[in-house]
Image 1: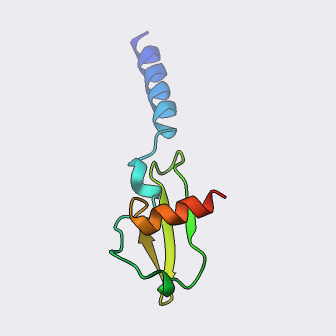
Image 2 (image 1 turned 90 degrees about the vertical axis):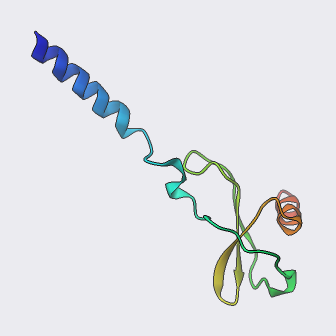
Amino acid sequence: MKSVVFAFLTCLLVLCTQGQLAGRSSNCKCYSYVGRVNPRLIETEPVVHHPNIFCQKTEIIITIANKEKCLNPQSPLGQLILKNHSR
């Protein structure tokens, strides 16, 4: 009887942990942000990733000198991009 209960609890534990993400921020693309950015240096349209189940942060990715950089959404330029993106 004890082995049946143990097996049931083990299966239940495995099923519960499969749905959990190991470190919610592991799927975020931005870990650090660039400082001040001259808007004229941005080469392509910024990509905005809104919070979802994989990453709880709003992320703005810009391209400067053929490199993708993360822009702080709380910065003045970040706020302007989010405002224009929502239109």
